[in-house]
Length: 88
Length: 138
Length: 116
Image 1 (spheres, rainbow over the protein chains, first blue to last red):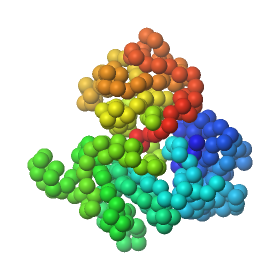
Image 2 (cartoon, rainbow over the protein chains, first blue to last red):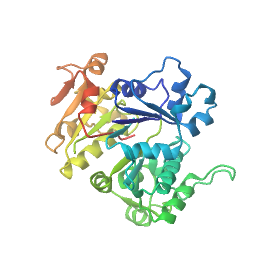
Image 3 (cartoon, each protein chain N blue to C red):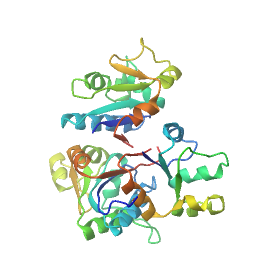
Image 4 (cartoon, rainbow over the protein chains, first blue to last red):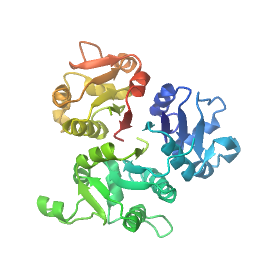
């Protein structure tokens, strides 16, 4: 299952999303959700990606794991690869 | 795994311009999906997202005019842009038909957006390969 | 293809919950299987005895009570959220299915969405 979230880590829906993740899922952080990169303890149980444009916008490049960064085409590609998805 | 080569997408936008990033994220996602060879069946505006169809937005010239940008994309690629009637009427997004129906002083829906019901969204659910939602941060 | 619509926002502030219910009823009207999950402050939609007349809003209690007749398959309520907001068998409207594990309800539906 593909999970996409755009809300800051303090938003209640962020925790709902995290609790719904299982290994084998994929998580994409966009917009305010990229702020999760500032938390060194943030360790989802599944492959996680962050939209580079939103990471850049917020000045978080130094905190981002390079393999996590995707562009809009990468985001599209990941949605194409998953039949089941939820936008939190 | 090789990515599927050509899928159909519907995008649902529920976040308003200037109240959220939803229109911007959705616009760049839409451009990327078209460049990747996928098809955009429909863009559906729901809830506060209906404000993206306003003909009257006039931001400063050094800011992006999100309704205008979206209208240009829809027109260029002949993609249906549907504004949910119930959401729109509540929030004061009105086309000529609704203006007459409700005897309102003006209409303000930006072309090429059309007003329709949730039936269009249900149809997208049934027909599009992928549906992606762009919410605000409420 | 079953759809789960999640309501996590409290009633009577924004229209999000109402618009979620509209989506659910539209799917049901077109014979598409759909269920609702209420969680977080959203469980307060399910409280019996709501009386929003003085704040000039309509109660959704009747619509939710009739949701089953209109074809909505279930109204799930996150048990933890219900406990937090003192919702129990006495204070919940009838026809609610408490769920201890909302994540598993999410995973068991093919489409999961929010109205906003």
